[in-house]
Length: 442
Image (cartoon, rainbow, N blue to C red; front, side, top):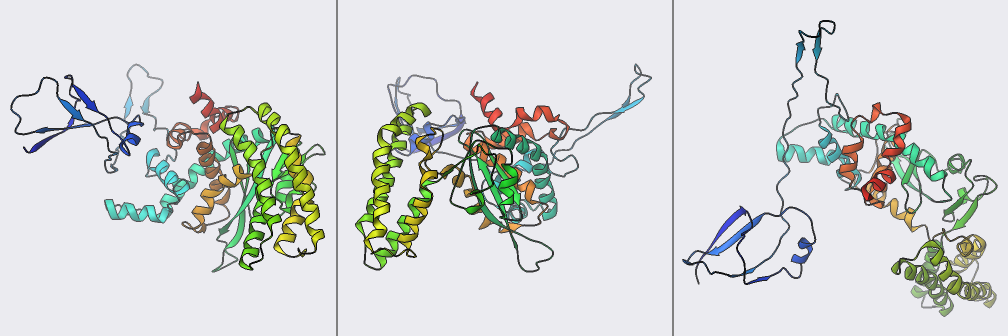
């Protein structure tokens, strides 16, 4: 066999091949990408005469080049124009930047944001990477100031997203905790909360508050009269919104309680087939919606499918839940008893999806939106101050909205952040991720 030479970064050979064997298996993943191609042609060094129409074997691998950092020097000339005597000496205007006084370019600031709020890489770790790989020693506070400046700029956009949500007729709400450093609790974090409000097909809004009090959703939904979909947290139960507000509850939360009850009984070697039947019936409801998704049905068509399949499931499930406590084998304070009580107490709110097509069976859309915060807590641990909370909430709102709407986050931030402080309030509606996604779709 002859040796093989390699020619890299070439143009693709233009002569005709008798046969081309395309990539298979894992290589087909790379084939689906629209990234640019670089060609590495391997030929036998001992071949003297080129075949007229040879066969070639094609494979593709995902490759990369190391990230390159460099310094951009901005030279603003100061000149006098002989034709503009009244103007006198003029200096070229400064570049429109995210943080005009920062030592970081827009691209570097965006990279800080994406690395922390999309990939859960803390700023102190990013600083350590800069020092390790490039020998660049930058104060952590300098990086933090640049990131929070971006969050501050995004707050008005997120406020507009919240108004857009409240103008609709369906919102899912949930909340998750986050530690916050405060001067009055040395050595201990205060437990604050990110309150999340969202709806399928719309943006995700996070609202940072230092409390989990019911006053938070009460203030947010003060003038809201649509459908509010939540878990069983008591803060959403009473005195929320206008008299027209419709409160729906989540089937996933009810199902989890029965799963936990089955686990408890399994450990005690005392399983109850009725508990398993409850889960099977609940799974039947989710199967209806799964079929609707697979068939890509509209809300009206999904509603028709629900009307056809769900009533019989609900009737059997409700009768089973009412009968189980009467057997005497389930104590009210047991895991099974509490699961039954939880579901029956919220039965009316759980079954509102039968009347309102827009209601999802679960609030998984909202819970999924909070996953980056849950992952982030294990990495960046806490917020440095309560003043940083609203800015970080705004960043998470944009990051999660872009993820949900399939908007490329780096491109969005690069298009929206520079010059954002000088935009009019009226123009901000055009800059939300929802509006951005609509423009991309045209």
